[in-house]
Length: 115
Ligand code: 5GP
Image 1 (cartoon, rainbow, N blue to C red):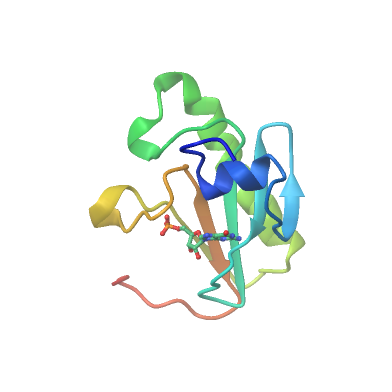
Image 2 (cartoon, rainbow, N blue to C red):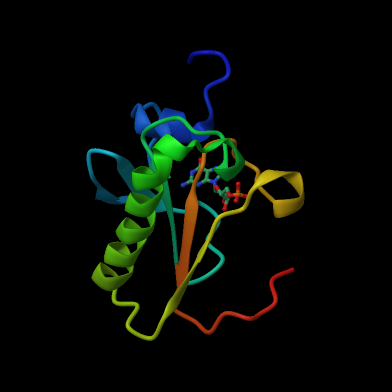
């Protein structure tokens, strides 16, 4: 394993398994290993971007692609009653993996505000 590779980069590279639910040329989506709802999927760019704060103007299309992919996955997984997308960013945002990811949560009513 290359030094400094994140766990998500290792999933992209096929070095560790994941329950992949969706894939395009630019993104990969798989089940969260510690689900917080009946459906908890992570949508990640194949391009390595550490966080939303690290995204560049040139990533505008990719960021839209991640959200539209989350919408497609929500539809494919039957979340007709609604769902939530979340991007945690940085220490205060609760980000624990330094590879940009969109959480897709659904399958139960979700409380607000978050913790
Ligand atoms: P964050 O806290 O950075 O917003 O979200 C990281 C998410 O990645 C967490 O919900 C955590 O459960 C998930 N996660 C961490 N390691 C793995 C892994 O090896 N496989 C999968 N599928 N999810 C992981």
